[in-house]
Amino acid sequence: MKLLKIALLVIITGIALIFSYSGLRFLYNGFGRPLYDTTMILLTITLTNLCAIYHFTTLKYYKTKPSRRSVSVILRIGAICCSLFAFYVSGYEIIKIVGNPYQDLAIDGEILIIMFLVFLFGFLNIFEINELYKRIKRLKKVALEEEIGDIGNLTN
Figure 1 (cartoon, rainbow, N blue to C red):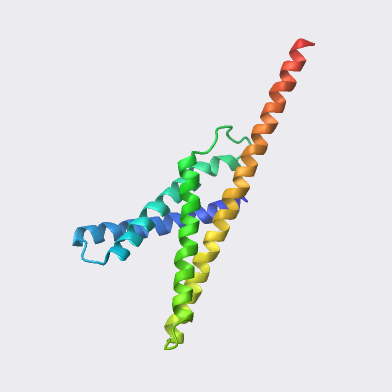
Figure 2: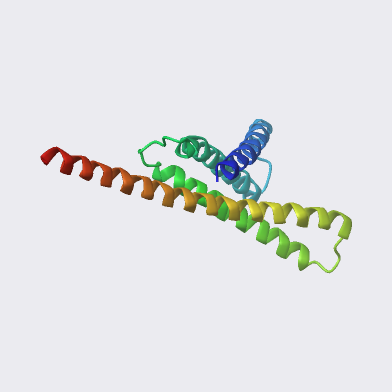
């Protein structure tokens, strides 16, 4: 799971940096694009940065002596929304390509592969968030049982 966490961290950090740089250029050149494009770019920048921060801050839970603190709810929701956004974008693009009878297979084939990878990223991200949530609950339960055991040993 730690290897998956590191892979997701590298991928999402790269995406966040690319879109943040592009977003800054986009803002510098002005909002001459349609509202849908502007919204999609701003959502991508926001959600990928939240997801990157989430993966960076939760990396400490995979140490041999993990932290007992819980993960910020805002970061967890941001990471889940990033995955849902990846599902939306990949699904929208796949439907748009498959529904087009005049498709160019050379270009659309590459886009289909990229959209499949975006969908796979969203799935693996949700999987990792869920597994980490279970791990944190398990660690808190073990810590609570140890504290109760310590209290029981003090009374004897």
